[in-house]
Length: 161
Image (cartoon, rainbow, N blue to C red; front, side, top):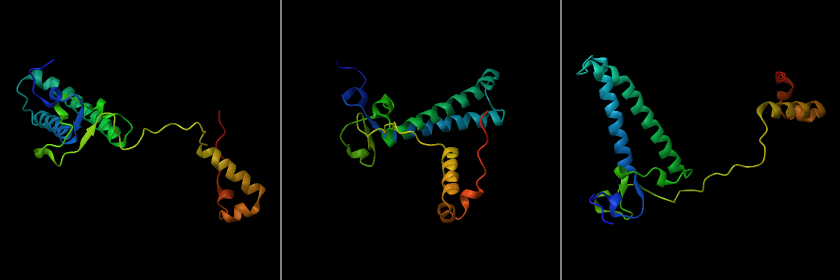
């Protein structure tokens, strides 16, 4: 099925994200929010309706940029598939093109490391670790001395309600 659009999104079956294009799009969004904020600050909005809508627009742009940056961070860390970051505006060819040799490609299904798995081992809280240290120090004076007497000076955790 041939689509009339000739963007890389339609030319290639693979979904590969151009980091350069993604960051450029975020840059444009943030610049738009900055310009709107400047117009508001200088009372230069063209209409009263635009003046009324601009603050919400700035907040929306910033929220979208923040969410997209968080998603990009998760993809780079390997916690999320690049396919979820892919969009027509950041699509690029799977192979390197001469004009974008310096670009970083984020390929769908690939990550720098596997997503972290949650351990079933329970991690003790800070207050539990402190109580254990106090008990050990009370039962063994050598532990208290090796800790520099630190365990003896730790106040007890507040009682739970």
